[in-house]
Length: 240
Image 1 (tube, one colour):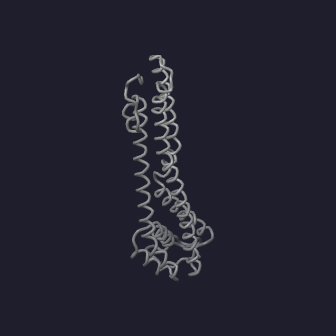
Image 2 (spheres, one colour; image 1 turned 135 degrees about the horizontal axis):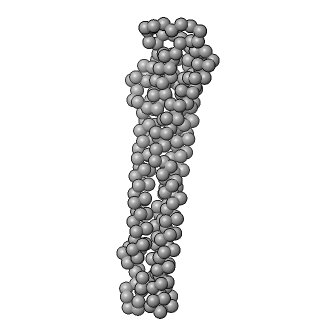
Image 3 (cartoon, one colour; image 1 turned 120 degrees about the horizontal axis):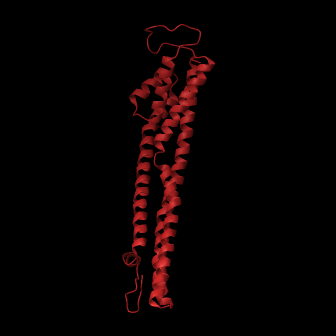
């Protein structure tokens, strides 16, 4: 990269990018792709959390007023599918498919017959609900860890582009034999543009990761609390 006397000196970031070396342009191109991907993930996650919240709000409001499992089962059927309705349906399926220990299984028994779970079966139900909760959490957390990866990897890519750009700048100065500030400054500025671009990619990705990680933790706590409320409702009805 030679900025010889009389050559046009870049005065804007766009000109720096256009006149940058091939290595710097490749790094900037990769950073641009990572930026588009991270913003796409953040937009998709925002829409997904909003959809889950909207579909769950009504069901949870009615669930708080219900006093019978049958009432909640009807609500789950009428409500839009959500993680909470799926967890409740999984609990009801477990209850219907379980026979108390020490009692014979009744072939062809009507689905939904009243059974009382033993302590070991209640523990098994908790494990089933925990497994369903983890599955819902994993589905909602998809691609969120990639934001953390982009936030940590982008500055390193920018630093690599900066170092390589500085090397090229000093090699160009050595070839031209010019050592004044006017010969050094354009090359260093071009090199630093990679670091600036990397920070522009990393900062939103880190903010997005922290925001969605906090939302995910709250959502996970709500699912765990809902599972405990379902078990408490079963206890009030004498199912446990």
